[in-house]
Image (cartoon, rainbow, N blue to C red; front, side, top):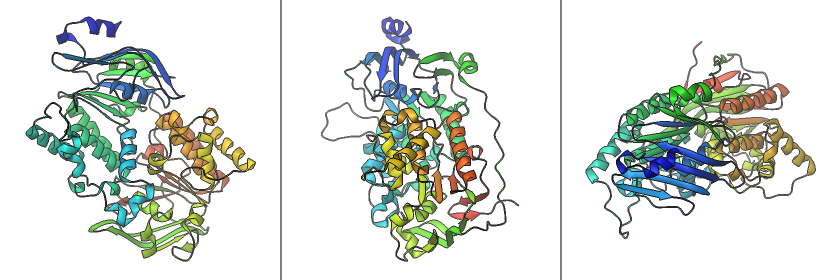
Length: 519
């Protein structure tokens, strides 16, 4: 076996990492067994597979984040030293192996924002660390002055790596921004910058392009290609073949929790990478407003936090039967705009904002508004309890609650089951959210958003982390909802080729202002 040969070889010829007859089990979810995998210095690997195939499980095991049920993981992270871990786990020198995934973003949210609305409340949004604070050497290397450990990396080398990471990821203008105020995409950039500043030998990136806009994805491709020419060995897990950087030399392909191909990219790609479907052109927005009643009506909306202006004089009206695409780069103000609609942002009271026919501040509660709006977003995903049964997750959509705290009627339970079935999720009903892959979790939260057939359906990056098959299923479901006429839709995405065909209008933001669409 490859891993056994690596274990017996001289140290100089050992791979950087080996998985030897490894079995990895998730709690009730996908299990991988009999995995043999060698990663040599100079190689750059991509783990490719559909949602639920075991990509994140394999990436976490490789990085030592989860124990293996059987077999051994070997790392030769520094010359003359081999470290192994099995079901008992092990410890490595700080910073040698770094993994960046959605779990890191969830951990950041849990630590600094106890609930998703905290970002919009000025008294809380200004609290907590800034981007700069999380990029200090003490933060990145988790230095504890009371620990007796090997000396951390050279301070000057860290400063150089930190400066390079900030420059590569374009974070200079965000250094003084509190972490709570970052957008989803900006937070992903921060986590990657922290990883790069640590100077890892092995860098494992799980779905690194999720939440990034077009320019940021292009920048990340260039960054990864640059890293691929350096000393860092890369492993990138993705469900989309078009996200694999050009620097990748080898592929490991997964399907249905089994490795069905691995080896040089040219050899494996024909088996593992399906043809990229034709990308439809973005539907042109109609210039004539719909005739239905306005569900959202905003006039000259401005939102500021301290000296930072997030929205600047935005006008936005959504009428019944209209279906809007809300587009713009990371940090353009899209999530802030949605927070005003969803009654999460107190600055709605200082602006001319009318939701479902009533001006904010006229006596309605936030729950009166939320009861008629369906919503799915990365922020909701970050804060949703992973221990909840998936059927209960969908049922919580009837009450717009993060968690289920009320009894439900039989008709509601039946409706929730139908929503799961519409997304081919019947098998998840009795499983917990945490037992599913991140992509499958997003589909369950989409069913939650649609369960009440709401008057307004807000889909904020609903296909983030989904493979092409599940993206098509989501958009077929959205198009079906639009045809039924029960919901008007606001659809946010950084991938215009992911937009459903029902979209009739476009609002594009840039630096907090409306950018006119070409005529």
